[in-house]
Amino acid sequence: MPQKLVVAIDGPAGSGKSTSAILVAQKLGYLYIDTGAMYRAITFLAIKKNLHNEEEILRLAERTDLKLDFIEGKTKVFADKKEITEDIRMPEVNAYVSEISKIENVRKILVQKQREMGSGERGVVMEGRDIGTVVFPNADVKIFMTASVDERAKRRKKEYSEKGINITLEEVKKNLLSRDEIDSGREFSPLTIAGGAIEVNTSEVSIEEQVNIILEEVKKAANKKGILLRVN
Image (tube, rainbow, N blue to C red):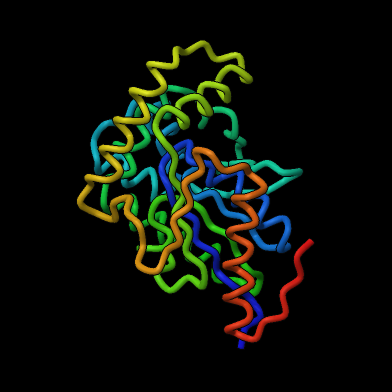
């Protein structure tokens, strides 16, 4: 039996899933994969190339060599060997990424890439919006993180401010609500709670508490599979 676990963490933007997923992966010594960064990368490239036609965007997703490296606590994103880490976090990408993400064939291409990334010998913590429902429906641990839209907006506004990006709290909130509607309402692999997932509302829960909740579920899954788990 492979000595590895697959931990799937889903949730809307600003729910805290990235922070928790990174810390959990570090504590377990597992591979961390931010699938949202992949959709952001395709979105950024589509904007840069001024692509609006679905077929053109699909060809872009097929041809682009996407690579994610987790270095010194941060995901580095490369498209055809060029780093675009900061580019994919711009407000214009945030505003358009859900439109790109709802294209069925684009999702199919990226889901296949994600499965390949998570199929190695090393345990994996993968976060996104359809990990527990589509990418790894048989994941050993499924977590769905959420928070109030006001709390999520404050967190995202803080991220922008730290990068010197000037945007109002109302603009951030409007963008989050729009993304929620598109992500939850799309026909193909919508944002939804996977069967068997543990829901964690992070509105009033500290990061340490979030991480501990997830680690407890990981320990339970490891015990069931007879896996010796090392937590750093």
